[in-house]
Amino acid sequence: MRRRPVRPLVVATLGVLALGPVAACTADPDAPGPTGGTTPRSTPAAASTSTATRPLVVDAVFDHTTLDPTQQFNRTGAMVSHALYATLTSLDPDDPTKVEPGLADYTLSPEGRWLTFRLRKGLVFSDGTPITSDDVLFTIERAKGLGGPVSSLLGTVSTVRVDARTFTLSSPSANFALPAVLANPAFGILNSTVVKANGGTIGPGDTATGYLTTHSAGSGPYVLDSVRGSAEVRLAPNPHWTGTRPKFPELVVRNTTPQQQLADVQSGDADVALDLSPSQASEVASAGLDPTATPSTTAGTEATAGSQTPAVTVKTMRSSTLVYLALDRNKAVNAWTANPDFVEAVRLGLDRVALAEAASGSEPAAGLIPAGIVGALKDVAPQPTPSGSSTAAGSTGTPAPTTSTNTGPVTSATGDPATPSAVVTTGADGIPTPVVTMPVVPPRHLAAARAALKRSGYAGQPIPLSYAADLPIQGIPRTALATAVRDQLAEVGIKVKLNPAPARDVVAAYRDGRTAFGLWSWSPDYLDPANYLAFAPGELLGTRAGWKRGADPVVDDLTEAASASVGDDRAGAYAAWQLAMNARSPFVPLLQPATRVASGARVEAAPGNPVWTLDLARIR
Picture 1: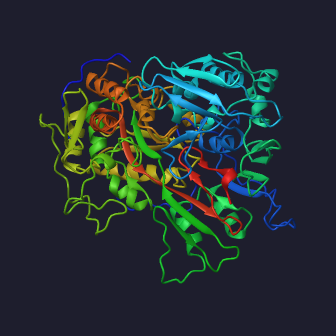
Picture 2: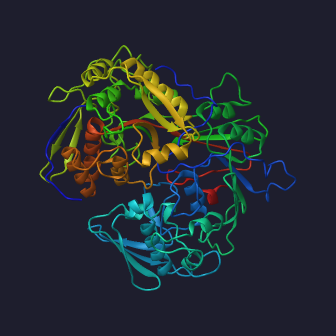
Picture 3: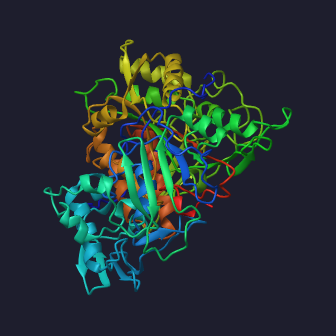
């Protein structure tokens, strides 16, 4: 990106949400697909086969449309691809923010522009074919040639073959995030011979996706055994796998609604359920316990239904998923969402704390980067909850009504309402450093929101809020969140009209820049703050929201500074960028939900991961 001098910047800073077992909905913007109804029970846990030999059954709401690892970019697709395809790098199971070698050892040059790999000896694909540099370079070049979100992660990376086991990847500028990027299952290494024989090539003529949706060509612990449309995926052991042997040699992943998942895991028909809502998870965990006791369902804890047969364990942990609103800046799409005062009214009129408290285990979002990733505002500048204000999820104390407190505007040096309040200073090294002086989570200010709405000239026109009606966000029904947003904005004076649609349709409209007002989720493609620059002007999500590069020079400068930052400077640079995005962008961060995994008696551990959700081969 073109660099400009970074200017000093001053940035100023519901009702009860029903989250019971209603129709599930939502999709990651880059990951929607068709979901079926109740999947026929093809492998009941009560079958006569023994516990040791019976396949492991995982229930999930499918959001993938293909199992071509390079073409899928979604939760269930990533989960299955991770089991079928090994990657050059991987993530430490105990600390996924740390990258470790996968198929190859690697060295990153000090300036971050060159990444040299050396494949480990003796590696083979599931058909016994040796893995070579040619397979790796074909995989990467195919990803670039296919375009789309996976290609955008690679950007302008170039490849050079050195020998059969050695190769380099280079970038025109520092690219310290590349090792983490390559751990994404979308970069699972393909058997180039097999893929080319079935239509694979580099460029728009590639037709291998159909083959890779029903056949695997990788080197992971499993191979694709069979696929029944959008209903079921069966995995079998890779005969040439030399790593740790999975406890369950056969595995079935089924497409089921959250309500069916609840019934399946309670009856033992499924071993793992991934999409229970907070109330459903509480129902499972509470079954059979002392009615006077409260099961623990907070982040990082487990609750077990001790007297149930079979026993069910619910593990709840903080996810790295962001739930956010997007308002299109293109006047041709919607004149109101393109109006800065209207956007300000939306931003100031929402109570993130109330949303998070109602969605058990969630945290209100301080910015676009979730807590736990470098640069997250909560991690850079944690603030105590001010006396008299709402209590954030997970903290102590009694929440105060947000409709009667915090109604005065937070102002910048120019007197304009903004959230949160911070001064961004520029040091001698040119790196902006934020100093947060108000609550990190932007508070609700009804008076300021109503004033901004009045300035906009809005006169009660219906504003459609689009969202996927058939996929959950970490088990949370999208309809419930959309309804809460509608009700909160009604108090400001904004008339929101719910506009649910199937994921396939609503996401296609968003990708084409045709969605005026949308409720979305974003799960990390890799655990690095650079992933969130997709929200910047002219980048993937910024473009979808009609926000072009050059529309806001202040944000452009901070985007460049964050992208170029290294080492200890990164946290401050990304925090400064988020503060500006909070006040000036078309995106409104809402909450960071929890992940819930319910498992039955046969499962001792179900290792989660923020990128591929669940490590199927490591389930014990």
